[in-house]
Structures are given as C-alpha cells and as structure tokens.
Length: 252
Ligand SMILES: O=C(O)c1ccccc1NCC(=O)[C@H](O)[C@H](O)COP(=O)(O)O
Image (cartoon, rainbow, N blue to C red; front, side):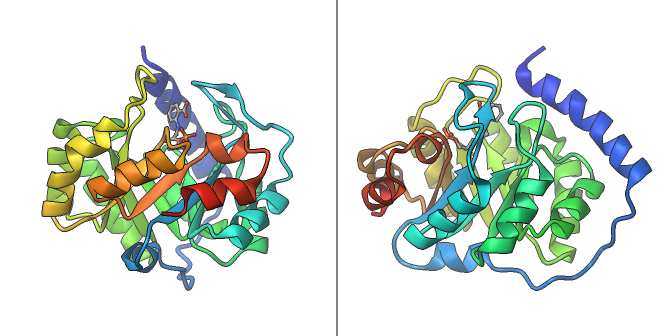
C-alpha cells in the first residue's frame, strides 16, 4: 500500500462525511483565471501554503496563514495553492477561507479530489482552481470531474507524473497540465520529469506547470526552458527566511 493509496482511502471516508453533513450549493461565483495568468509573459509563481507533508514531515506548522498569503501576493505570486487536507498535510478548508479573505489572486484548493462534493466544497470555500490527479482517478472519472468543475467556472490543473498518465488524460484536452516532479508513491523528486513530458504537453496545446522540487533560480530557469509557464512551489516558501528574496530568485 503506497501513501497515495492511504490518502485516497481517507478521502473515501471524508467524501461520505461531507455528503452526510453538509448542504453544498452549485453556486456560480466570479473566478480569477489561472489560465489568463499563465498566458502572460514570464513564469507564473504559484506559492503554496503547506504546513507539513508526508515526505518531509513538519515544514511550518505554526505559520500565520493569512499573513503568509498576503506576503505571497505582495511579493508577486501569480496564484496561491492551499493544501486543505488535514490528516497528511495539517491543512484545512478554514485555511483556504482565510486566504480567500485576504488575497485576490487565483486560489488553488490543493487536495485529493475523487468526488463532485469536494469540488463544491472547494468552490464554496473560495477556490478558483482545483487539482485532478491522474494517479488517483480512472481516466473516465477524471474526465467527468473535469467537466463538472468547468460547469462551476473553475480552472482545473490535471496532474501527471509519467507518459502513461499523460496519454490517458490528453483526450480531456486540459487547459492546464501540471507535471509533478515528485513521484507520489516513492517521493522521489526529479525535474527531468518535466523536461521529459513537456514536449508532449505543449504539442497537445495545454499550458504547462512544473510542480514540486523547485528551490532556486536555476531550477526555475530549467523548467522554464522546458516550456513551463508556471511553477508550483511549496517547501521552499514555507521554509524561507525571506519571502522577498525567495521571490526575487524564482522570478524568471
Ligand atoms: O509533498 C509531499 O510529500 C506529497 C506526498 C504525497 C502526495 C502529494 C505530496 N505533495 C503535493 C505536491 O504536489 C506539492 O505540495 C507541491 O507540488 C509543492 O511541492 P514542493 O515545492 O516540493 O513542496
């Protein structure tokens, strides 16, 4: 059993609880567009609120979430990702709601989505973007959830880690594909994954985000050279002594 299997088993339980306890609407909100940000010149930095992770343990558990998010926006984040999973990442939907209260940039609800009810929950908490992970979903189910999120006006990042997952999601014609440099089953991180998959992503007409393991200007330049329009950065920001310097380094 991999950590991803364990996380997904927990998500099945959470979905049942959500369905039992919450009345959620399909409210149409006006959303900030990540697609438009990614089309702008230069790399879009998506800065993540990530208190802890399965691979690294505690990163910054006591973070002042609204202050961190406001600093991200002030120093140039094009979008902000908030990990809402509590059991494995020590995040929450309350974090997402707090961030929504202090920033205008597009907000990604970073969770392990397996059901429409989680998309409703993300939308209600203020998200503009959701993530669908190819390693977590059958292609047909991923396609259904993608279309459903679109009906709510949300942007969707479809996440892949290898060629097989990428080929399986291309029929969806995703606006945005996130290549995760981290193998979610082994935690191995390698920026060469972005370099390997980028040509096929770009040939399919999708915008490319490189996710995980980006810590320096050299890393950002490397994935930009491969064709990434955006980078998703968690640990480096959560452990940075100076957010200003970290942004200055990553802005390429
Ligand atoms: O980060 C983990 O340990 C992890 C483990 C299992 C599933 C997902 C995981 N991370 C989610 C992410 O994709 C990252 O939070 C995101 O890309 C930022 O990565 P990093 O900059 O390396 O913190």
